[in-house]
Length: 555
Ligand SMILES: Nc1ncnc2c1ncn2[C@@H]1O[C@H](COP(=O)(O)OP(=O)(O)OP(=O)(O)O)[C@@H](O)[C@H]1O
Image 1 (cartoon, rainbow, N blue to C red):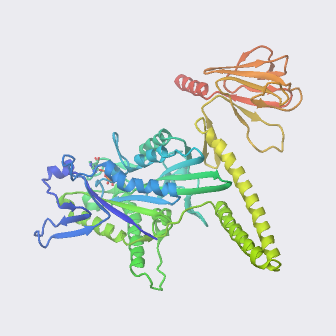
Image 2 (cartoon, rainbow, N blue to C red):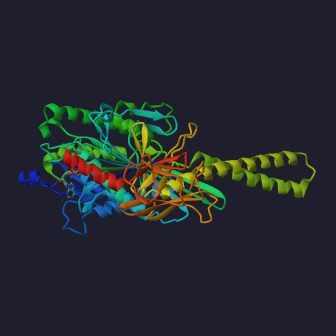
Image 3 (tube, rainbow, N blue to C red):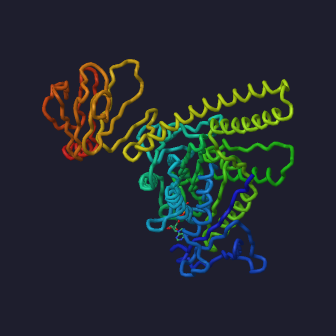
């Protein structure tokens, strides 16, 4: 059980508020936030709220009071990193009036990054255990007018503007056909983030020049696996980092037409969020009551997708952002009340251990206890008829552990070797297909065996790649079989931009249907036949990119 952690943060005055001559209505002392009613007197008009953190970020020149992006990250971001490495799901969501600093807190500005980039950077900098295999997958979506849109993989098809939310019986709600990207370093994440941010729906409103009109959910799925002392461990943590669209009043934003429609959709999600939060808070406050309350997760796309983060299997942090200005008193008070309510929500986070690994661990525990049971029986009651049954159970469990461990190791071995190549090779989901991106020149096997189902991709490393059979005296980098393949058949020399096929000892080599006996420079898309049955397509990604550019310049 873990209560939702709640923080509030007040930003500096913006130009509009300065022009209006606004005075500050927010004060903070340690964890307490005090809001003054600009119309009341100091005695009757002050209300105070206590949170896990109250961040005063109004004026960076007041160093001792000022809460920087780094401070917020240290308190909240590091919690998320801890969850990721322990295998818990985590969620941070920023809530607040439009223009109050949600995007600044979550994403930040160039040179002054917010929680999301800092969390991603720290996640990678902690991947130090060399015996561990790490896997990080990213997706980025927005919910705009209640529809889910992929922010990284934008296509013009109608479907990508309204992806379906579905629910997996074990893994919970997910977005069907959302693109997922395996990333191997912070730069990979950064470029996805930039792409997604540029695609996010923003607009200028009276309250904020670049107001986010959508709810944005940046999701990291972080897995770790290790095989040590003959036993596997594998955990998976899902982290949602959420920048909500602003809560707003139509009169304050001056919204009409399209902006008003956005406002009502944003509010539909926020109203449902509010109902979900208050129902969950009621449940926790009336713990022990036998009545089962209905929680309307499905009433909005946002709450449905965040179901696990609200009252479920996740450690959740809410950060409520505030304007300091008196003109925003009622909005700010309502944000504080909302945040105060969220403090009561109790989640039920558990470590997400791979089910097979869990089973292996439990069986090992059982084996241990069976063994100690046996040793006690041997000492005190040998001849007892229960012993054969215990022995049989022990053998069964040991055999089962062996099989499960082998299966797991094989599966992880494959994943690990793909991840090893990850710098050059990226597997991404696109629509219903999977796209394999590689930056290095490579050969793709074109198999004429109707029954073969795998895809063969051979990277052509810098220097020489030897191709032949396993019988060759010198070990070959690519071993082939089949008619007319000789022990040392050919070499492929990769000198960066130039890749050359070098046939050896009259070996049967054909390129684009022509027999080749002398070294030949390969060009993008060439079809290579080695022997009578081994056919490959040659891809040179950087050459292809250059050709694409040239073609675009021509048309
Ligand atoms: N703590 C802060 N320190 C300095 N500037 C801030 C801070 N918080 C917000 N700002 C600035 O205030 C402006 C509005 O902030 P931001 O866009 O983050 O608001 P928002 O809550 O995301 O708004 P919306 O809901 O309309 O998207 C931006 O120019 C941002 O840089």
